[in-house]
Image (cartoon, rainbow, N blue to C red):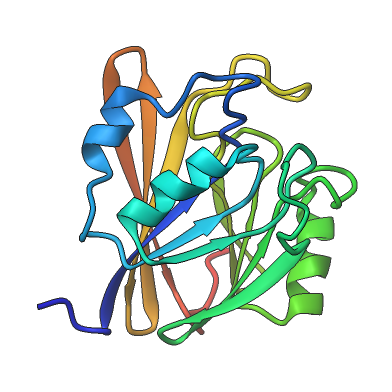
Amino acid sequence: CICEHNMLVLVIGDAHVPHRAHGLPKKFKKLLVPNKIQHILCTGNLCTKEVYDYFKTLANDVHVVRGDFDENTKYPDNKTVILGEFKIGLCHGHQIVPWGDRESLAMLQRNLDVDILITGHTHKFEAFEYENKFFINPGSATGAYSGLNVDAIPTFVLMDVQGSQVVTYVYQLHGEEVKVEKIAFSKGAPQDK
């Protein structure tokens, strides 16, 4: 039984299928199996309905924001989702200038009034605490190139929401090997500086 105190959230984006990639890496598809993930938060640039339909096979609750290359113009520019004790903001990130800038990200986090801000666009994984809030960029699920990152490594993030703590696992595909890193964030915990 999966209780609501523990929930698995897939954070993924910037697939750019079929324009810059054929699809998700096979090694990732083997890891992403139905009935394990409760929610999907997608930073956009899926580009096609097929990618969205694939995500719906993994979880019923799929939230997507619009990237600058998405065909579906009905996706919102940003979205706020409550998962457990966390209010999470979702935005593709091409609207943030300069792209990936911490101060600009913090401004959006304050405007959305969220504990965790998830953005994409740079195609580079990043997770950090800033001003006692947590920021995640899941990178590109396919390793699609971008103007900012021509040698993007395929990455996605799984967040395990446990009460007032989120344990973030980043999955990175290096050649044929999937490497996993773990980062924990506690709501209201003092920041180490």
